[in-house]
Length: 169
Length: 125
Image (cartoon, rainbow over all chains, first blue to last red; front, side, top):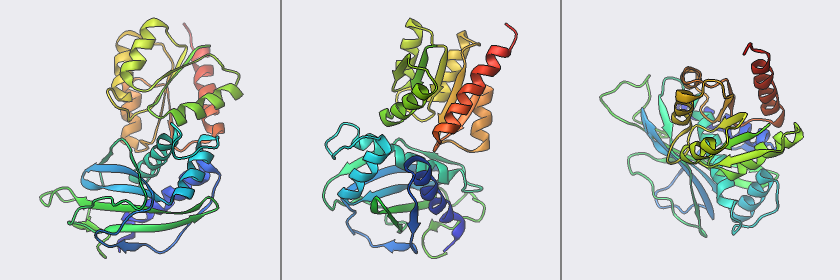
């Protein structure tokens, strides 16, 4: 595993939760998520483009998502609140944005966030690269940061980046 | 002091409004993208504008360039997840007066707002 592409996401989720939610996050050893394995109840998705394509997903059980969104927005809310998706989308935006700034040698762009709500839904993933999952634990509950990154073109040399990130380089 | 907040996240706008309230600024306008912001600016010129970078319809860097086509003086602060040096340089070249990287603390945002306003008020007319 090439830590150059993983450590920025670990540092980023810790920083974003500490700064915006006053919450410490413990990140466990990364695992490879199997094809077709369902996500939790709420997924906040940011697309990546540029020197690499892929996505960053914050994946929450519902109770964690509600606790996180409520803490971030500063108001008690449920999943039906009009700002629920907005809050979780912005958090994913911060995690992805902060991480990409630390991915040296990669010129990346991030998409606007998309938030999916549904019990044990499946976020479809490319077969070109595995999805690396970073299990996270906090006082607000457990959640996961999932990362998929693939070099955008084999013709372009990208600072020694592997063809896929999370493939056990 | 009229302040325009431009961000597609209402959660962020609410956080910014709380920070501004702590600083004593209660006259706040809101827009969720660059297009909406330009419409509001055409009606009422704000004394300070906080601009996100990544937004639908019109992003923040385009908004800054459009504002600067006609208004060189309006204080503009970019508040964004875009933290790379090249992005900061691009924003400064486009005409922002200050730059805040998300995630931010209330203290950091407050300091940048106060510093921007103090610097511009001290500058010769």
